[in-house]
Length: 379
Image (cartoon, rainbow, N blue to C red; front, side):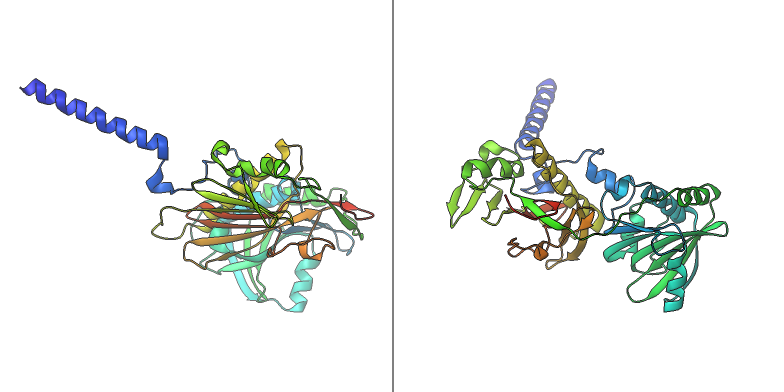
């Protein structure tokens, strides 16, 4: 009798285990992830590299290597591959780990001229960077910066008299100075500034664009570019056309492609969380979607312009983060509304991404390839 009971218990346990595995096989971690989970991102993905191996790229980086005004370079694209960025990120990491607070004050014109005229590297954002998020990217000393101030737009790094000064500047004309004493990093800055600089000369140029879908924009041309939005492309509908808008659906998402080359993903979110996800994790989800879009374009032999984070917002729901990206063309930022012949529709930026619970629930992008040209034209 006892053996019979044990046997029944074992059989029941196996049955429950099989049921659980079957549910997980069909639905994934449904109760946690909802109906539209972001596919897991491997640690080596470009999005993780931008966030974990350093910090999120700013809108631009200005490098001044001498007293003359022309001895200044502004970099808009490829920041993370730039030696100045690498040195700066290393210095910031050590500052957060070992640095100290010096003083705060009001940025008047005389002091501004003084600090911006010296050799420096300035990292500038198009939005107010929260210090809690900025520090979180380095995982050191919680509250080190946020205990002094809440946000900033510009970080100017300047080696001077054996120490490295960090000026965190906000648009409210306030500054906060932190100091790092590190002989090796100090020498890294001096050696970098001693190199023969190569400056980007500003020049007027026109912007041309290419439609990767083709001029006809037939259903057969559009479909390959939107299938990557679906985990199982076979399950996506063949697409219907209403007023020139191609629409593709499966059980959890809808993808539309508009006549003005705007692609729009809207996805369901099955489970509400108890509170909002962090800015860092939400931005990581947005960057990962961008990376997958770019990889999908490249797999079809089509380039996709580099982008920079132009801004972000929170809301209107308490669980939603919105991220706005703009294209870089010819090493410079581009405003999609400033290009003649381009209909950006309701888009305020080239790419707009809405994230809830670390899941991309809306993704909109102007799907055109832009490039520098003497005589702009469309083909």
